[in-house]
Image 1 (cartoon, rainbow, N blue to C red):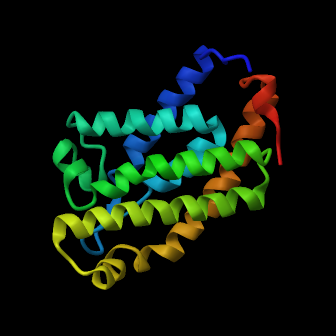
Image 2 (cartoon, rainbow, N blue to C red):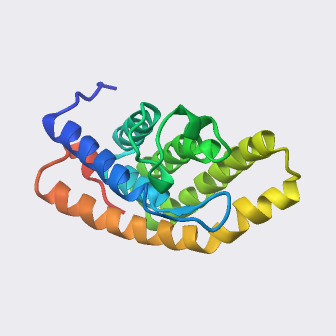
Length: 189
């Protein structure tokens, strides 16, 4: 299989979606030790629009910008302390979520229901990774951690999955019709 080269469009869209994560990521609702944020919504959208490699690359760019201290994480925080703190596991878990969702999006030819299922699985992996890290840092029992870090987010994250997928599908279609993606990336479900 021939390796695809990065185009100017790819780099621009990757940067643009990382910028959107940087703008929406800090906007959060502090409901406990883990805030409600829009970062995962942008990940669902970015990976659907750009595909696995570029969407995950966009997420990694966002994480790097936050790690070096830009205030792009929830509550306008930045720095390595946020990534290694109690909620850092959820931020790192987004990488696994993006890879799982992106893989299924591409293998299913962007089938809507397969994509939704993949995002649910990817989000569950993010929950597991983030909650395990939270438990390790906070020395908290599993049941209490689940009640604080997972249960309050399930319904909202399901809504973000559906809306992010629908918006991602429409933007991807529009950009594909405009010739912004290669022939290989134009498949629709």
